[in-house]
Image 1: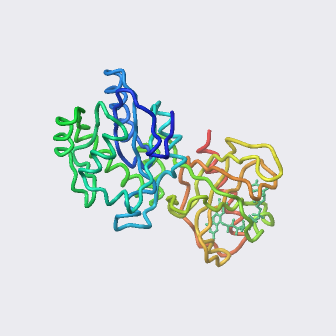
Image 2: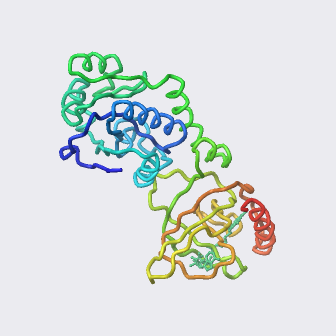
Image 3: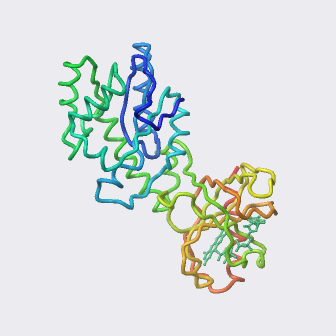
Length: 315
Ligand SMILES: Cc1cc2nc3c(=O)[nH]c(=O)nc-3n(C[C@H](O)[C@H](O)[C@H](O)COP(=O)(O)O)c2cc1C
Ligand SMILES: Nc1ncnc2c1ncn2[C@@H]1O[C@H](COP(=O)(O)OP(=O)(O)O)[C@@H](O)[C@H]1O
């Protein structure tokens, strides 16, 4: 897949069939749309082009500037790549782009830059300044300028929209099973391993504290999770590790009167200094909620129970 960031230096697309969207999460609703895109393109021996925007338009023009996202741009790119798409165009979404009138958006952006054969969008897709452009305006231009406009079935569009909201809600409510089901893969995030209070090692459970690489990324609800993690080679050219089993805690550590919310992982059967390395964590199951434990001894006993519960989830 070719990824294009500069809309003024796009290649000459061949019979391109385009779809447009934010595709946050690249979940099963989105992959249904990408499947339709591939079928339409195959029928005209054309190239598939996905247009997406970055940052999330709702951060620029919406009422939710601090919206939490399911996928960072890099994650979105690699998930779309897995769908076997020919071209992904990442449009820098800024104030100026948001000011384009619907007519200018069609003429100066879609037609001038892409020369589309077909554009596939949902009935509810709106574009241009104040979101005045819609399906029928695009159809009118299509007839005049020689491109086709096809509709993504209503049910597919609605399912996709409902899914994004449901996935966010499920993750915030610790419902990993629902999130994995709707995403079509297990939710994951990455961060840098930073130092903490160094209490973990004193009770036999060192925990790698993760600082997210992207603070826009949605953090699931507090509690304990069964996870797989991978660690990159990092600062000392250590070995890279993948598919390590572990238990992750998200919360503010009431047992030590913690104030900040932390994300930390105790990796099983592992003993390496991995400070400053990058870790990716994949959530497999939710084990329990945060507990107001009263002593480090109580924590130690609980961690032994958690480990058993986690191991029974990771086969
Ligand atoms: C699997 C797991 C479960 C945890 N559960 C709790 C908990 O229920 N309540 C709590 O206050 N802290 C919990 N913690 C966090 C510990 O308090 C924390 O790991 C310990 O204070 C060491 O912190 P440090 O890594 O900064 O030294 C948990 C940690 C792990 C790895
Ligand atoms: N099994 C393990 N799981 C997690 N981290 C480990 C493990 N073994 C060694 N470490 C190292 O120990 C650190 C965690 O130890 P800990 O005492 O909890 O210190 P901190 O409070 O700084 O996180 C990790 O950042 C990592 O470098």
